[in-house]
Length: 384
Image 1 (tube, rainbow, N blue to C red):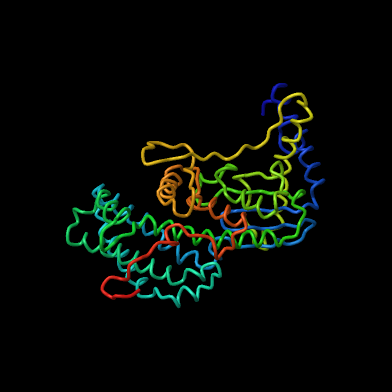
Image 2: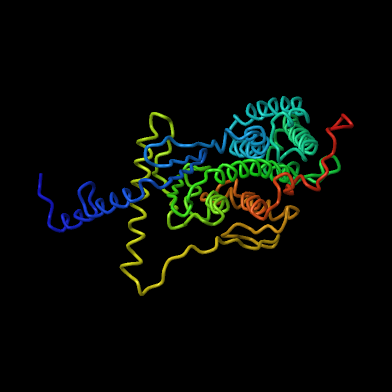
């Protein structure tokens, strides 16, 4: 094997793996922070490693959250319909079987949808909304089943123009509430429960947040999503839960970080996480001492924009004024679906976090698409 040139050896003297200057500094920083609490945030879990070999404390923030999959099923009727139309317009005959299967499942949900069912899910923040939630779900099922049935009689109506006019933006005598508003309400109810659970868990950790090491990883709602401070709303949840004590210079989004917290893996995962954190932190801390006469980096405010029906394009999430600002919420829904760097839950996350951070009780948070909205009774029944 050829001996590396002096130039390559100079590079690896600092940047090489194992026995290099950079690796030595990283190990020093990791050793200095060995007893500091380490918080790992993934797309499904929050884990606290208290250091010194202790097992992690865990919170399942996604599938373990009560009601998540139940309401997510309603939320995702919209994208499911859009997917069926996209296949139909492309000439993919699979759409008809998928439409029939979706209709059968929606019909089963319609029959299972009762106030008692939603009460049994056991989400405290949903208690004031149980009757409205049941009525909204009944309406959503009625609306979508009606449209799917119309496609069986006339498959040529399986177009995006028909989907938008008859379902997503419908405002007819029989169906006066757009399905878009149903999606907003279900997203918000899910986010409200999940955010409250997350904040409660984080606030109960009783750690020195100013000394905490925080690692957020990829895989949070999509391979390309939540990879920056302003696209990962869990950063804001950490700031709120710690009452601003968590230091953003000790908080890093590391897409390659290990995420396993299984008993057989946690020791190795913690060691790897602390090493990745230390390598990142060590470099950032060199800058201030090496360049003392130059401006210091400080995170800026995350951008939002003001959008109106006349706005053609946006490059930042549209700002919402209140729970009743449904046009802006739907504009935000398009934005988070169209921008691959965004989490889908970001359509309502900043609103929910802002409400809870401002002191509003979870059960008192106004729900866009549900609070102040009257859903008609299920067709043909005269009641909800």
